[in-house]
Image (cartoon, rainbow, N blue to C red; front, side, top):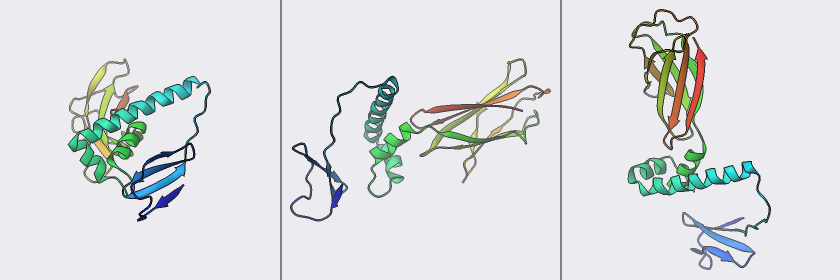
Length: 187
């Protein structure tokens, strides 16, 4: 692959030249690369699923740059050579992660709290906490709030829960494209 800066012959070129090379224009720089070769073979189930997921990511990327608010948000985090579209596609393909669930401040009493450290390659959109009693009944649930300047989210308890023995916490984290991850932890 070659990158061409200000060259009167190739600047602005894009497309394919025979089956040998392709020209792509990326932010004022022309990139010259070997033309991709199409391979005729059967795809495995996993490869087909991956292609479908990538197609969904492409559609999400296109929809995101059509939305001025999302486009501006993605563009703000783009580095040199990246576009809002690139960031949106990558965001769709990468789910958030739950790094840690801290229940050390949860006493079962109102105003005690549960903290969750959640990260994403772009932005965590929502963190919810569900507290279940040992018999599976719900003690309470709700949305956690992002702590200013950190990756920690705090859920403040509103209902008394007398017995914590055998109780569990279910945390759900989602990002802007709607990727959802869930983690369960005992108290």
